[in-house]
Image 1 (spheres, rainbow, N blue to C red):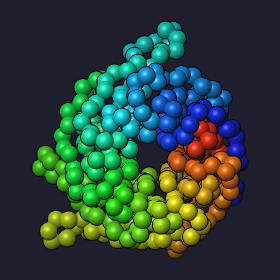
Image 2 (cartoon, one colour):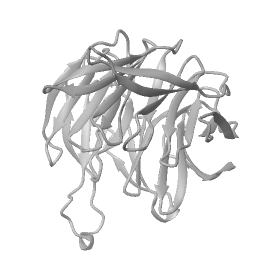
Image 3 (cartoon, one colour):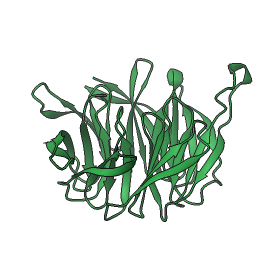
Image 4 (cartoon, rainbow, N blue to C red):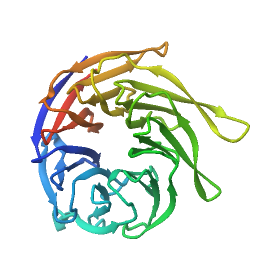
Length: 331
């Protein structure tokens, strides 16, 4: 098993923080305040659009596509979230439709670190250095947003948010060394569980890509990658999650991002510049099946995401070098 570099795209002049993919399109976000869109179809990897860099006054930290649409949310260090989209009713004969700014969402008091759309597209979650997680309800056109809840149980900077692939269950990762799980209850949102165990900032988490699964992978400043599992609901109605596994120790410095593929592989990246890919055997034991050293030369890697183009499994990484590297994974 191995990974092979297909293309290195020098897209930004500063750190590339985040990537997201949808409908054959990749979006990237950077400290240079730019958002770029790249065509993944036919594996041509051509830059098709650069969104207006005057929209945000500081770094764009996170991007997330709304499922089954071209709408894109971007969170910035200027404390705002921008929403972008195309004319969904335009025909093929109209040619390429430029992406337009649909809305600017305000509310956070400090840097927005993460944004994520729910699987249904009804909810947008955001998190911030102001220690809060906000849940927004979006209209069908993606132009109007209502804040449904401001969740303030984290004691420190919240780094990342991610939704379950089939449930309205949200995970948030924080500088307070925890992951919190949130769910809706009686028209409000509440903390369903707190995952304790990491001994440093939790930078990122991701759910297993199975509609019925309730497992989550997390990564941390403590150099570990951990898998958690939902067990049951206790007598007080709180969810019990347990640490199922600590993956083999490979990273020598902080692990910044993890991604769980639909095929069951976990990829991790971080400050040491490595890509590590893990698989689970029939006994439930995780093992390392591929590693790539200096995947972005001497630079740190900030983000990783699995995506599929046709029948091809791709792994995309983004680093401090401003590059999006696209890897072919050979199982």
